[in-house]
Image (cartoon, rainbow, N blue to C red; front, side, top):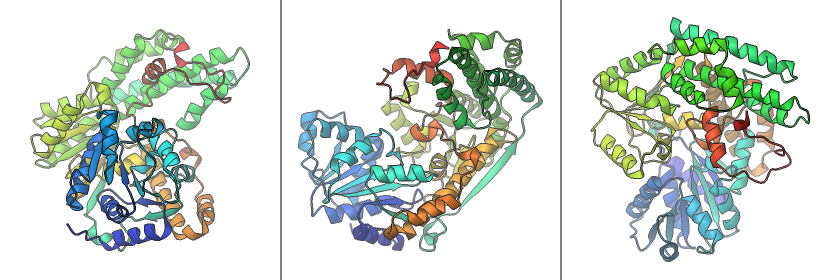
Length: 535
C-alpha cells in the first residue's frame, strides 16, 4: 500500500530526517502513527526498527497497522510481550520490525536476550518517559549515533521541567508540534464543540461541606500551632508539607504527622463530596472505620464527624448525576464515553444510567479484578453497538484501541493537561464530535478546569518556542518559560499526572500501596521517613 502523507506529516517526516531525534506532538487522531510508518519504511533498509507502546492491546493494533500499510508479513513484523517465553522472544528479535511493550524490552536488554542494535526506536505515548518508567532505561541502553529516537505524544506536559525531562530521557533536541489551528492541519480537523455545564451543590451537600470545612479549619489551626501552617488551597504544597514535618529532629514531629494525616483525610472527603457525591464518600468513611491508624481513630471520634456520618446516611446523588442523565438522553443513539475520576463512582453511574433506560457498561482496569479478556470483550461490544455509553476510568484515556465516539463527557474536570487532552481526543477523530464537561461551581472542579486549561496553553507556547529555536537549543524557550511565569496555584504536580491512577489522591489507597511495597533504600532527602499507616 502506498503511503500518502498529508502536508504536515511530510513536513514533520522531513524535519526528523534532517534534525535527528525528535519529539512529535500532534493532537489525537491526526496521524502520528503514519509518520512512524514512513520512518519504519525508510529505516528498515539500515537495520531493525523497534516500535514501543505502553499496552499490549495498542501493541497489537500497531502490529496490524505496520503489516497492512507497509505490506509486510509476520516474518518481517513481530509482536513481543512478556507472555511469550524468553527463547521464543529471542527468535522474534531477528525480524525487521519489533513491536513491544517497554517492560519486556527493558528486561530482555538487561538479561542479554535482546541485542542493542536498532536503526530506529519509536516511543509511543512518550510523555511517559519520566522517573523510572521503562522508556528511560531503554533509551539509555539503545542510544547511539546510528539509532534514531522519535517520541510521539498528544501532550508531553505543561511545564518546562516536565518537557525537558521527557526530551532529556529520550536524547531529543528537535521538536515538531502542530495544533488544530495550524493552517496545514486545519483542513483535516473534524469539528468538535466543548461545552461546560455548571452545577450547583444541593442544600444537603452544602450542610455536609460546612461540617467538613469546620473540622478542617480546627485541625489546620492545631497544625499551624505546632509550627506547620498548612497550605490548604495548594494541593502540591500541602503534599510537600509532610516531608518538611518528617525532617524536623524534634518530638513535635509525631503529633504533627497525626494532625497532617487527619487533614489529608478531611481534604480528600471534601473533594469526594464536592466532585463525586455522597456514595463514594460513604464508602471512604466505611474504609476509614476499618483503619487502626491514630489519625483515623482521632477523626472518627470527633463530634463533627458523627454529624457528617449521619448526614451521609441519606441517599442522594450528586447534582451532576441528574445533569448527566439528561445530557445522555439528549444524545440518544450516539456513542458516548463518560470519564470518571473515582472508581467508587463508576459503578453508581452505570447503575443510574441503566435505571433510566440507557444501555451502559463500565470500563475499568485490572486493579478492579477485570481481566484483559473482559476488557477486550467490552471494547468489541462497544464497537459493535451492543451498548451506547462506556463509563470509564483513566484506563480509557490512552493505550487502548477504543473506537472513536460521538461525544465525550467529563464527570469532572481534571487538573492534568495531559489527561484532559487525551480524554478530548476520543471524540471527533473521524467525524464531528462533542465534548461536555460537568463542573460544580465554587469547588475544586473550577480550579481543576482553569489549571488544565492554563497548563495546556503554556505547553503549546513552550513547545512552539522550542520548535522555532531548535537550532539555538533551549535559549529562547527558556526566555519564553520565564515570561510565562507559572501562577503559584499551578505549581503543583498531582500524582495522577505521573501514573494515571484514578484514585491516587486517596490517602487510604496510598496506605494500602505503601504496605504492599518493599521500602527502597532511602535517599538523604527521604531518610527518616515514616509510613503514614503509623499515624
